[in-house]
Structures are given as structure tokens and as C-alpha cells.
Image 1 (cartoon, rainbow, N blue to C red):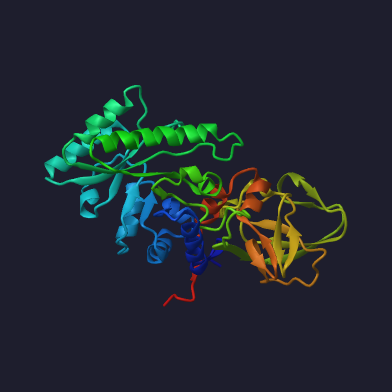
Image 2: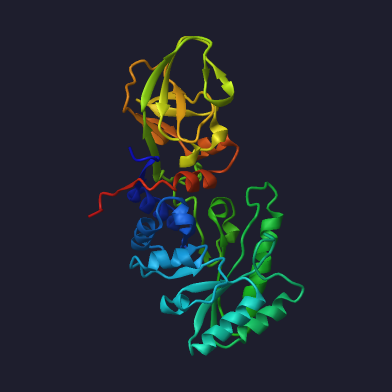
Length: 366
């Protein structure tokens, strides 16, 4: 058998989610498709989001942008973190993010040498402490960047580290600082597209909408909230590979962390942490089989995971198993798995999303 989780990606739900975000914010959408579109498959997702009205796509690194462009997708692409100077920026009209004065100078020289003008955005570090322009001479540095030949600065951004906090003061301060940069640039005759809002900010901080928003997790339906109706895009499946019968008092898997408390029926699933399942869900998560929940028992192994089928004696080998998704009205989300693993849904999606077995579903798909 081919190893790996079986993923179904519902492109119609992706389109629905994008339209829900657009309806809420009434702003241009910079759709985040980095990390292989959060594990959903960058090319199919980029095609779908572009057709559905996303204005710009955003990736982390140049290689991700080239992967999308080489598939024939013509949408503008913002490259968030890469400092590479490449002919591909010119060839594909990519929009690099300038995270430092040094890179701006280098990019200017590169563009001037090619006798070209490169459209770029500026990242202003207002509190993330990760990447971006942040110094005591911020406006002086920006003024210098604006005067560099070969560059056309059309946008500015910042990023929030803690929109979830009850105290919004730090996030509001970040917005204020970004708008100072926008006003400074307007005084120089420019009107850049200012963007700050990620998925959490779209839900909780309307002051952050500015000129455009950058949804990620919301598009993939993995941020469940009563504030916005979205639909899950990724379903994660496997199957029952083997059924075993164990006596009371027998152990299951490494470390003997689970001892049967009764005569038990145990299903073996042909997936493990090598396939992206977090080992931390050992003895602490349930899957869906025939629309009913079956708990994981014992430690998740590299290639195998065991579930308790004692209360589901009708289950047979090859029965479908849902790890994330809906079956017969029951739903398990990426957030559920993340909670059990002590992590975040972003990590879950990008981990299980490494599976090469993806099937795309759409009523409009040719």
C-alpha cells in the first residue's frame, strides 16, 4: 500500500470561505498560501482563490512563488521573508517584501543594473520582533528607501503577535505606528496599500482592516468561531488495516502506556508520526469510524496507530477512518487535534498536509 494519510480538499468550501471574509471586511484580500497553502496544496488553492477574487497571493519564500508561477497562475504574489536577489523577481513581476534598509539598497542596485523597476512592500516591525524595519531612525530609513532608484514602494505592512489578548492596546499601538508610516509616505506624494490584519484580527480587531487584509487560517476553515461562518476545507482520512483481539491486562504499543481494562478489540491504522500525526495525541484523541468516536490507545508509532474498537464490534478492516473532518454528522477539527497535542492548528495542518495523497473536490472542477 502507499503510505500516508488520505486528504480530501474541498475547493468549493475554500471559495465559500474567501467570499465570507470579503463580505466581512469589504477590502482587497491578500490570501496567504505559504507552506504549500497550509498543507492544502499551493497550486490548486492558488488557482481557486485567484478565480474566486483574491487580489494578491502571499508566500514566505521565493521558491514558493516560483512553484505557483510555473503552474501558470498570473496573480500578483507577495514574497514575505526572502532576501534573495533573483532574475525570477523580474521575470515574474514578483513583489518582494523589504525587511531591512540593507535589502532595500541591494534590491535597488539589482533593479538598476537590470534597468528595471521592482514593485515592493515595506515590512514595519511594530512589535513582532521577528523581521521588518525597526530602528530609532525608522522614518529616516524609510525616506532613504523611497529615494532609491529602481524601486516602487506600493505597500506597507506589520504583523500582530497577540491579537488574542484581552488587552488590545498593544495591537492598537501597532496600527497607529503603521499609519504614521503611511502618513509619512503620503507627505512624500505616495499612498501605499497598508495591511496588517491576519485571520484573528479579521475576527477581533476591525480597526486593523486598513486598506487590505491577509487571511490565512480563516480561508481554510480551521479557525472555528461564531463570528464568521466558514467551512472546513481539509478532510484527513485513513482506514482500518487490521483488527486484533486482546485479553484484559495486555499492553498496547511502546512504553506500555495503555493496559486493557477488559477484553478488547483494537484497530490498527496504517499511519503514524512519520505521516504528520503528532505523537502527543497518544492516549488523548479520538477518531471517527462509522460516525462514532474511537479513542487512540497506546503511543502513536512511526507508522502505526491503534484505536479501541471494543464498543464498535461491527467495524471491519478497510473501514474508513476520519481523523479531521465530518462523518455521519460527527465532526473532528484540526483545532481538536491541536488541543489534544498541546499545539496549534497551523502545525497540525502543515504536518498532515505533507501527505502526497490529495484529492480535490469541486462541483465546478473540470
